[in-house]
Length: 104
Image (cartoon, rainbow, N blue to C red; front, side, top):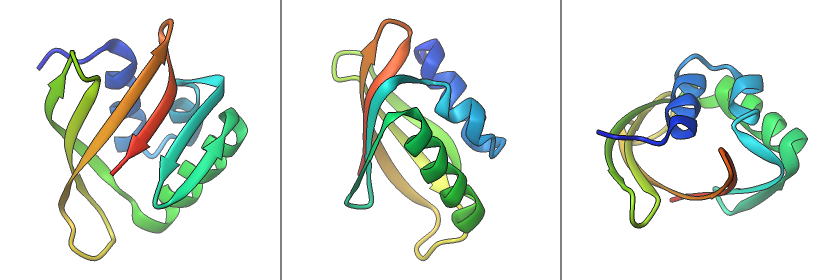
């Protein structure tokens, strides 16, 4: 599977529970939408993923990436009901970084 470099870095950071590296995959003004909540800017994104890492200890296994749609389907496993589940990550990019991410 041919993932954009920044998506590969995001997956690596998630699987290493590295909140700082995860947040650094995003622009300063990026927006993340997950679990019905919006997280604005890199500091909020870092706080959100740090809390999620501690609570869920989720890891990602990429299954499919659509270059046309900028979507990643990934099997997510962790300490949450129904694990593992397949989630879809919708990306918008700005340069080499992520500007927007919606996880459903």
